Length: 89
Image (cartoon, rainbow, N blue to C red):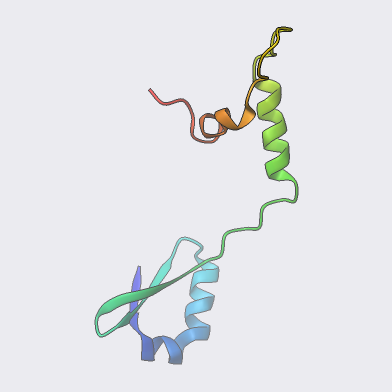
């Protein structure tokens, strides 16, 4: 993790951007009067279009089938956190 003052960041911006682009895990902290006010890091990759919908459909397929009784159907949204973060113990 690199710390630079805002005035230094202005002068070295192209170099800092190249550094972050080359090493995706690096972070450049920008300070004003020795206080960190911003961070420069690589952008997250764009998700594939439709990835969230496919994940929800896969989750719906894994849920138990509702019985042929009258009542409410299985609520997929109630299981989203479990699917994304795993079961809590």
